[in-house]
Image 1 (tube, one colour):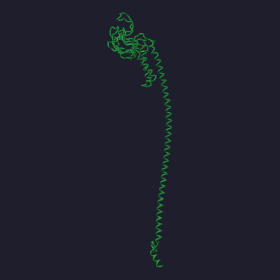
Image 2 (cartoon, rainbow, N blue to C red; image 1 turned 90 degrees about the vertical axis):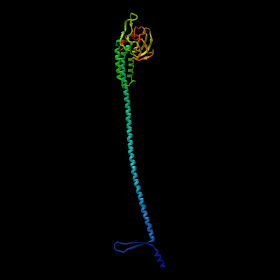
Image 3 (tube, helix red, strand yellow; image 1 turned 60 degrees about the vertical axis):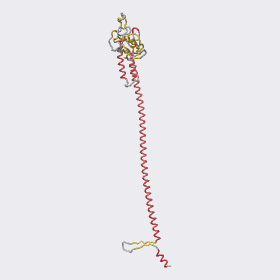
Amino acid sequence: MRNLRGKMSARRKYLSIMYIPHHKGGVKTIRISHYRTILLTAFAFMLVALLALTGYTLSVVRQNNDMIVKHAEEINDIMSEKEQLQALIAKQAKELADNAEIITTMQSIKTISEEAIDDYKEQYENMIVAYIDKDVKNIGTISRGDKKPSSFKEDVAELRALISLVESAKLSEDDVTSKIAQKEARLNNYLDALPTYWPVNSRTIFSGFGMRFHPIYKRYRMHDGLDMAGSTGDPVYASGEGKVIFAGWNGGFGNVIIIDHGNGFKTYYAHLSKILVKEGQWVSKAQKIGHVGSTGLSTSSHLHFEVRLNEKPTDPLYYIEP
C-alpha cells in the first residue's frame, strides 16, 4: 500500500512557482497541484472575461451616455430653432397684419381722394360749362336775327377765343368725354357750320349785295348775293359745314347748290359749270363742291354766292372771312 501511494503521488502533476528574492533569503517554491491549476486558470479566464465584459459594458454605457447627452443637445438646439422660428413667424404675422391695416387705410384714403378729385372735376366742369353757355348765349343770338349782322365777325372772333379757352381748360390733352370736351366739340361744330369760308380762290368781287343795274334785264333790281370772279372750271368750296338740300338746275341760277348749315343759315352757289355733290349729302367746311361756270342768266364765268339767314338774303361779306 505504501508503494502504491508513492507511485500515485509520483504521477501527480504540479505547477511550481519559484520566488527568488533580490535580497537575502533562499529561493522559495510554491507547488500547485493540477486540479488547483485548472481552477485557477478557469478563475483567471472568468476574471478576464468579467473584466472584459465590464469594460465593454462601461464603454457601451459611456457611449449611450454620450449619445443621450448629444441627443439632448440636439433636442435643445431643435427647440431653440423652433422658438426662433415661432418668433419669426409671429413677427411676420404682425408685419402682415400691420401691412394689411396700412393697405386698408391707403385704399380708404385713395377712395376718399378719388371721390374728392371726381367732385372737384365735376364742380370745375360745371363752372367752365356755365361760363361758356353764358358767352354762347350772346354769340348765338345772331343766328336768330337778334343782333345786327355787322357784329357777326366780332362774335366769331369771340367764339374762336372761347374755343381756345375751353381747349386750355380741359384737364388732359386726350380728354374726349368730359363736359368740357363735349362742350368744345359742340362749339367747334357750331363754328364749322357758320358760313365764314370764302367759296372761291379769287378775292375779286365785281358785283356786290344790294340794288344794281341788271346786265341782262337792263333795269335796277335787288342783287341778293355777291358775284365773285373766277374762270370756268375753278373750284368752288362749301362756305360752312352742312347738308346739301338742292343740287341741280334752277332757272336763272343755272346749276346751283343750296346748303343748309343749321341755325337759320343757308348758302347758294349759282351758275356752276359742274356740280360735285348730291342732294342729301353732308359736306364739311372748305370741301370742294363744284366748278365755276356761266350757266343760267349769266354774261360771263363767275360764282353767284348768297347767304340767307332765316330765308332772308343778307350781305355775305358780313360772314365770310378774308
